[in-house]
Length: 407
Image 1 (cartoon, helix red, strand yellow):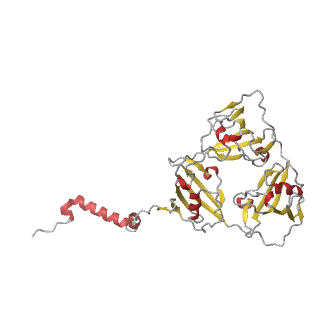
Image 2 (tube, rainbow, N blue to C red):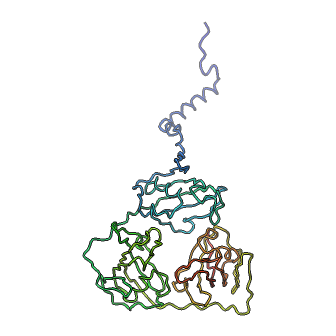
Image 3 (cartoon, helix red, strand yellow):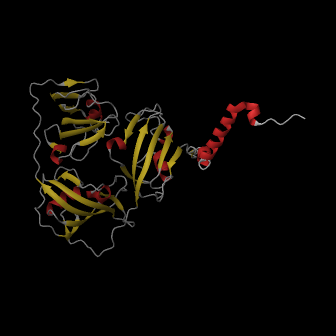
């Protein structure tokens, strides 16, 4: 009978040393072996809805799910099918707010957001029929599948108009009723004043729910009174008030958004506003750029522009976030809007359709620091639409300064 061979006999002295090394490793890792051998976590699973929306929940939220009528705040990054970013709220540093069920969103977004809970992060892959279809939009080509990385930051359920005994005490000549809830002692508001207010707007119907609120955005509304930058009812009622006043306005629909309505306000809906007058002052009037003797250049689209001051460096790229100061004039020289008066430049993502077509084209030509005058034909501006103080078919003039280019 052959003797049994020991480990040392078969593998020699060196092998015996390896055995003790192996035993030591086992002893050292004995309490962590489960961790070392743990299976990797499963990747988030993509799901597809009946409409064709593909979504993947990267992080589950722990808050409520949004309901129709809720205001939601969302950060997002949108990519084309080739991976290029075409729009991003994160680049702008400003989440977007919208009301669920108001048709303000792409159908794919509306459906996708409804599947999340507050705090969730997800990816949506939205086919063309749930996005911009065969029309495209801005930098989005026709029949394009879009991918969005989204984070549902917060959900706000609108409240109803407080049930109080407040009744109208006064009425303007056009029929705007109002009641001063708290009297201020500041200066009376006048035309051409830069006015800052906080407000909450309610639908004056059976539901009487909030449709808009500067408090939700944590940002006061600033505008120049008398320049048709707000609804006619405000233009008429605010000159009767003072800085510091808190007032409730009852607004007939014809002095607000009338028969057409404006999302999320239905047609022919009367409104109620609670307004706090925060501040008002006569702003400096912008001085139009001096362009005499300078060349007027024209592009193939018909955009005309005059370089008043040269910038430095390369021009911005599609998708860059631009900071721009501007003053806008009608063709007769009337100033209709100015970020200079408000003391706050406008920010937008270049090439995404967030601004006028003429702006999106012009700013691809200008380096940082450029001062220029833009002359936009109706086709490059608002066309045959009337917008606030701008009549239909109007040629617009903008004096612009490209302050900064971000990514």
